[in-house]
Length: 285
Image (cartoon, rainbow, N blue to C red; front, side):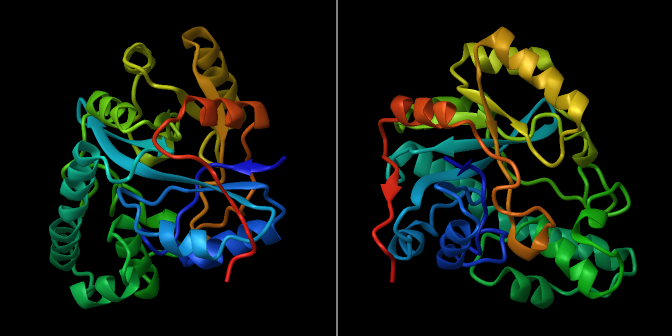
């Protein structure tokens, strides 16, 4: 069984529509795929309608969080998308994305970059606008060679020249909200130091004590030493270990299924969840 638990569609900052994402996941030989768009569940309906036979969909989201000035992402799986407290928090984060992106455009313009809000809005389409859309605009303008190259101190990395903060959820509150909605939480790419400052292990231990279920270890932004360290930390704290592609379509070079989660860990995630259940494919439309 091949399980990829971290993928994005055009509902946030991926380039595949939700329907294309599940079809491409089946074509890549996956048995299970999770849709984890940023702070939104808008892709669920389209993905379910197109779900090929033989592929199971795990519904989820990637929640924007911050602790002690450090941004982090919390993967939430199989929660009730209509639970009011978690829904209200997701909407609060999502609604702050537009003014934040406009602020980044303004800062880039002050730096002499001829980017416009209209360009970024066109790239984002119906998705939840975020830094990858601004980064894509910089690629289009020839300012940087790739989306990854835009995530530096010169441009859009945390604390970078064009960085603008947005509302982000306290991770302990995110864990509480997701658990209250019957879901399971996994700290996404906790050792991705090239993205900026990372959360210290002491804070991860505190999150584990507060109910965090797991950490994402096998990820393109973790080198071999980081994976070894994180596996040891997970063992010490009793946390589940996941692996995922963090697929964004053509916006990143990583392929669907390039990193995967052990089927036994996937089974434990589904056992812990009470807010929703994996959706088996019936052939799609």
